[in-house]
Image 1 (cartoon, rainbow, N blue to C red):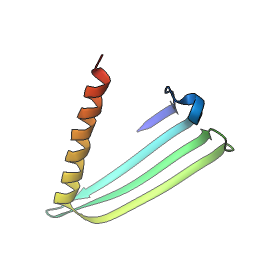
Image 2 (image 1 turned 90 degrees about the vertical axis):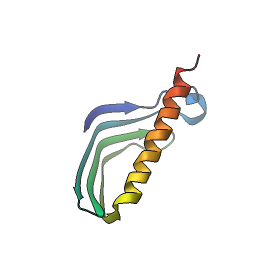
Image 3 (image 1 turned 120 degrees about the horizontal axis):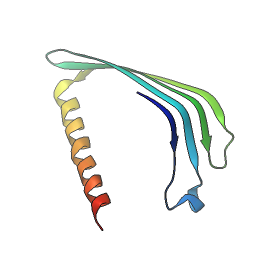
Image 4 (image 1 turned 30 degrees about the vertical axis):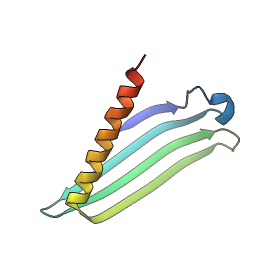
Length: 94
C-alpha cells in the first residue's frame, strides 16, 4: 500500500495541532499453515511532520511476527472488523 500523504484534520486541531505523513508505504507478507500465521511487515515514511516537534525523515520500521496462533489472530481481526463497523455507524449518525 502506498499513500502520497496522510494529514490530521479534526476539530481538535487547535489543541493537538496538525500532522502529516508523506510518502507512506506499507508492505506486508503473510504466511499461514494449519495452526499458525507469520507476518513480515515493513513500514516506510519519507517525512513525518507533527505539532511541536521537529520534522523527521526516512522513518522505517520492520515487524516480524512468527508462529502466531491462527485462531487468536482471527479473533483479533474479527474484533477489529466489528469495532470498525461501530465507528462507521457513528459517523453516519446525523
